[in-house]
Image 1 (cartoon, one colour):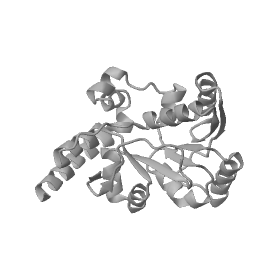
Image 2 (tube, one colour):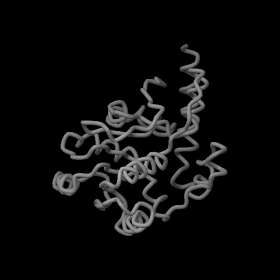
Image 3 (spheres, one colour):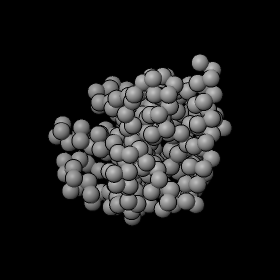
Image 4 (cartoon, one colour):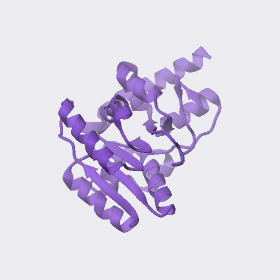
Length: 236
């Protein structure tokens, strides 16, 4: 499906690909950030799968294309691949991002939820830009493990741009940039309840809890996205 210049996939992929598969998500905020960040926009448009993660994308699809689609969150994507590997008798998953404490909690939960999976993690330095040596250290650790799925959680747009810049060097069947899912799965940040998710308002309790971090996303990007959708509608 084409929406606002992006080709969006409406289904979750399998693990039967012969070459590396890059999967990213798009929501109203990432769309607006990409309008001003050419490298981020290129990373999104170059995705093999771009998943609709955000009720705004769902509503825009219906408004512009008269097409009803389902939101697929990064959390859904994460669980999809874990279940897929478990159903096949096991596999390797690598988590790149977050703190050592968060990664330890992820490993602990995975051992209970998905006992057949092999897990490796790497906590990169907390900084805006990595040195070439730091990049190569991460890539080397990933490739030594040779994962079926590499999950990257460095927050957008850093994670998508990092994957795009280094995808030719990575050994993995699938690479997913899933950001906050690391904290949700570890339990360090509580994901909003199913009640809010079903209403399409998952963003609301998150905004109430973290207004300083999320104000720009909800108070600037959301109106900007609505404006872009209306402009696209008029252009039709």
